[in-house]
Amino acid sequence: MTEEKTTEMIEAERYLRQKMLWGDEGQNKLANARVAIVGLDWQGKYTALCLAALGVGNVVLIDGSDADGSNVRKGTTAKSELFLDMVVKSGSRAKSYPELLKVINQQVNFEGYTTNLESRMDLMALEGATVIVDATNSIKSKSLAIAYGREKGIPVISTSSKWGYTKLMATDHNRDLGAQNTEMLMPMFEGYKQDPLMALMMCGVIAEEVKKVAMGNFDKFLEKPVRYKLGPGYRYGFLEKGEDVPLPDKALLARLKLGFLGVGALGNWGAIAASHMGFGRVDTFDYDKFESHNVNRQLLAYDGIDKLKSEHIAAKIVAMTLGRTRSTGYNELILPGFETKEKYDLVFDFVDNRYTRALNCAYAISTGTPLISSGALPDSARWDTHQEGKTQCMNHLMDIYKEGMKEEMIRRASCAANPNPSVVMSNAVGGVGAVIAALSVFEPEKFGEPFNGQLMYRADLSTRFGTSELVGACDCYSKPVPDLRISQKDIDKFVAKNPQLLQQTGTE
Image (tube, rainbow, N blue to C red; front, top):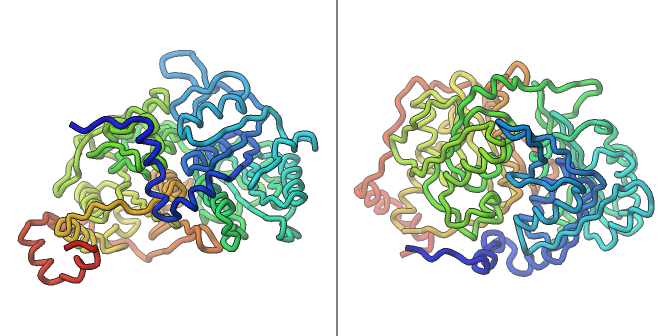
């Protein structure tokens, strides 16, 4: 029986995966940063969540509004504003959210100021900031934040959202905005309510840009606008003047049954996104427990260390939706011949190894189930849809059967179980992007046909979002899937043929 970890043990291991990338020095830079977030609507609160998970040491929350109490618990008339599965106290958001975010990461200092940026007097809340994030839909607020940033030499990130569209721009005091000055004010969002899905889609991108400022990596700081748009056209294009993005059919979504195959970091963010979609059922499949060295990315484990992932996330889905979405957690290892009790309308591949991806691909093809796969590396994410007759399967996209079996034989032969570097930002983008892509599977007439290829995010490219398109659908759904079982004889044969691959792992 393993010893239950204490709070001190959990906090000591919180950043292990990301410190593999930038060490103690980089984490100390984040801890010493001071980020001012203006606005605690969806855009601001999810940005704050991502920064809390990342470990930005000081986060200032500036908002003059009160919690709205628009959520109604199923079967009751009780109303409350929710942040994840936590109830927001009535009254000032700026006073309530520091306490809630502290639950996510107690190592971060949160300050709340009950004000909006409406005059020079309000700008005092921005003093000493390393970077300012204006997450409002207010032209006046953005104008004051940008002017203050230029006066004080503080980089400013401007972001807004409404249903179906979100945008992000950034500047530092050395950059001449020119004609982009008006664009940074984002007038097309003025007067619109912010949207939680669009805010989730952008929060990881925002946190990545904040990280670059805190680390002093200005050579990679955002220069081009970042856009994300729903509808039948290009996902990363402009929203045309007068263009309205249609709403999904709530009754249709409420009838759907979905399965999450894997609920690690990608699955955590996918669960948060799914909680805003109104699906009827979202079941979860995983076989292990939450570990403290993953809590910075798997943020729904804030109260779940050493608990079973599948059951914990299933409970969170029910709680975040106030019982509107049903969820069962299956503590099950995905093996060759994997089957499910339910017949799902769509499954998500949210695992982090190629062999299990291969098994998920085989499951989807053998059952005729559409599959959306997502993956993340420290500076990138991708998500791709695989649907019979419309797109190519995962094996055609990435040769997943061959690559998965090779990776698994190397793992078994070397007994390697070393964690890879990982961060919250790319996992947020990949997990949320995958869940939003479900709209194209079920309502292509509104949101366009499923993209045939990969949708991608790259933190190190000047254009952050992009695509890699394929031509034509494959016929794999009409063929049997390969036998993916691996015997000891298979491993011995593989090792004899490829000894150099084991040497590359650093094992004997």
